[in-house]
Length: 288
Image 1 (cartoon, helix red, strand yellow):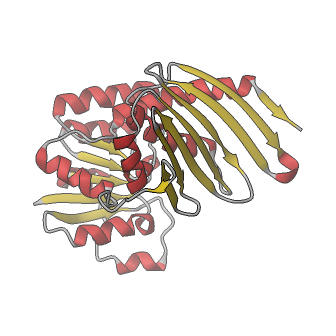
Image 2: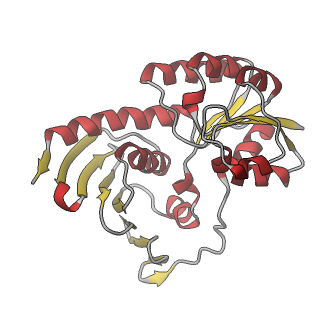
């Protein structure tokens, strides 16, 4: 049986806690939530509180959603002792820190999986299986609660798996209207493998997530806003593509000793791309 420790905001980790309780292969040893805002609801989770050093020593797996609570040395030592890590939020690592963790994970055969929720949507599993190079993707991704780095990371991690590469060329432009609190960004990502992505993203009055995909003889329209999924003018049958849970896949990877689809190496690739994108956006930033 695998032992697991929870680090961070227990309310945010509660959905994982409930799934863990149903899995006979894993057992929650304890939690370390000191440093987060405690709520009355947290008292209903029968999990003992540990200091972080002791919790790391006791666990095979760490489920983390507040990396600010874990000094980098603690994470490094956990990986060295083959403690597997599932990142529920995106860790604030530098490029150099990611490179070190990648090296340590390979040496220790430790899995460090970073969340990539968009990848496990049934329609995106279908897209990954059916739209092949050469291909063109046109994506609109807008949120009312938009945060640049968070949203870009989600999208780039998804695209990293779908395209199997990092963009070789990036063009960008940004328009902002502070008076009406909207922001529009456009990226043209050339992956150098006959795949091009046109990405519109930012903040607006309503949420929107639409992907249009084109390849030879194939056209797909995936509208996540109204759950309309069309392929060559006909509805897509998503029955064979049941939704997968990335945390369950994480546990399977540990048991079967398989590397994750989205590991710390993919996260580093996304970080490098975001650095280039921010530079480009700063150069072509237009405001009222």
